[in-house]
Image (tube, rainbow, N blue to C red; front, side, top):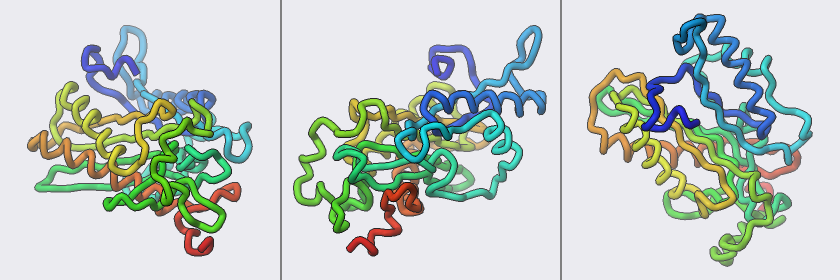
Length: 270
């Protein structure tokens, strides 16, 4: 991750991997690197092209079997089967084991997932991809909870007392993460890409309550193809908004797994 700092000389990456499996999932990056090597893609060094693949993971070993995690072959398959038109969301990919509302423990959490949102204006485009595995509850644009810590009757626990979320979470201190990627075609310097990622954190705060806690390992990446000139301040705000929308889409499209209820099942619980 240090290479991505505006202070470092590296100006481009070859791929970005968001995955599950906790630290075990980092091994999947070798599959992405192997695929890129096959395509002769990488950072040119004196003796070989070295693929630059920043990788971020969520902790999902508490869902299903802790022995099932992404491996090299899974990553290579994902690269080979990648399609521009793929807009699948919810309980898929890195979002398979994602959960939300864990401030009250796993027994009352709901399903998180992978969400996508897109914005376009006058040829400028920005897409957010978010893997939502948060301590906090997910709220809509009106602040209403749509997924989070829930009672057996389908009522949200924080609906009675929103300050109940402020206590020390019952979930593990290092077992929660929201991974976000902003993909855009507007021309950005590395510092401007950093600024867009930093401003993108506002989108998390608008959709997750509480967000960016001491118990979340949240991260936002910005990647640009540098094709279109556009007002940066405008797109910084657009980036925050598509992250907010992608987070909401992640839970609205998630299906249940391991008996963890999902947004799609809320009506059945009432």
